[in-house]
Length: 170
Length: 437
Picture 1: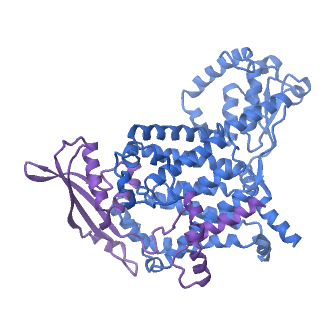
Picture 2: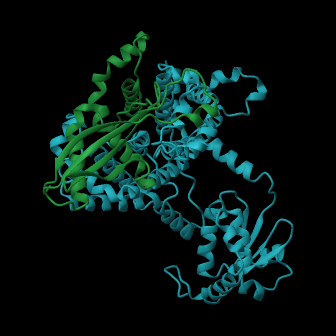
Picture 3: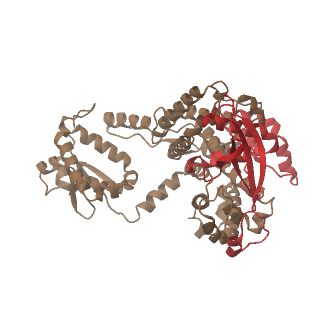
């Protein structure tokens, strides 16, 4: 009896916690509204989830990050964080980390990323580093384009000087 | 009312084969282990106070309630590496099945701890591993295909000459797993209908040109972009098709009779295997295909295992007679292992020390010859002995089948024959507690 009740509870909890965009379906909206009721259980058991995989539309913004070091008064690029600079087994988590720290309110995380670069590369204390963010957006198509169109397409890169830090003893 | 209660009781507590969750335990541990090794160079960076996410910046990344992680207390880099190493050991034990229950609970809780410490590197596959890890942790029977189970089998076989009955378990963990998988795909499909590119069929061509995910060069991805509308269509239809598994089995009887022999669940799972490994060929999406394939293993039922055996035995009739020495301890243990691995039920084990049996299966072979090496008799009457018999049997055991071609590499028969002869020569020195080879 207890196990049956637990199963029903778990089924309801993860359902309520994973539905989005249900404003036009009253029943689903009501279930979604019960989320706060299931919140302690779902979060405590680490069962939180959201399945917006390549949706509603896929991620089209491609970013990469350059790290520049101040050497003899000039900024010299010392590292580029992109899919080519990371081993294949580290690619998914590291690129995900880069995408997630890109938002405007995550500036402190990007500074910390630079300080971590100082630490892991043994860069002398007092050295200045800065981050250059580069990005382009893959076009959004409402119809299929042929292979030739894609062969002629080239990304239109933008560049932005982002955060800078002075290496410290972290 | 009573019939409703009976239906609910059957729905959650009917018995099913425990092998599926045993396989899922192994695959889960192997997947987590593989990706944990991948993150080895970054353990300090991702999870320690010295890394990219110290506690003071945590508010930018994670919630501040109902969050539990050992790594909130273990923050010093070397201590984090020590915990990571313990995690690796637990996963190995979980995979091979040493204290499967304890190791599964510890491994799942450690996975939660690492994930809750830093959400930034996590992807969909990590979420799936957390979700199905929780189900493994609470499932009543997960010890199939474990060392712990092997020990029990050996004790039973040694004392009674019988194997234990196949493990059975209640079906409710399967129901929860199926629900979890339905949630993943159907909510994902629903989310896709909220955009415009999936219905336009242009998602895959855009994703193929996202360099974070594309596995091949731009030229190659350009040339395969034409599959985009078909892949988009397939994805939406297949993801929504999981809803069909909510239809009670009784209602499916309205289908035409010729359709009854097709299992909808099996076709949908097969569609999932094609879907995920198709993505894997073209795109790097982290652990997602591995995690979903792990979940699919847990969705196998009795009828699926029976179907696998039926299909693999389609072109095989009869039995392979294995003539072994019933007076030799090593031979008895070998036969014990052989029978455990004989999932396709193709072997018939015969003790040649029994005169009646010897007369029936190997009348033309002397006892001295049988004593020198293991003999087998194939259904067509052909005999093989020693290394060649061992190699022949290896083709028929699912677990050894994949590396059997290695025994055909030039030079291997020469080495194999010598190793076999050495073992056979000394086999009588073996007792139940070990051998002097």
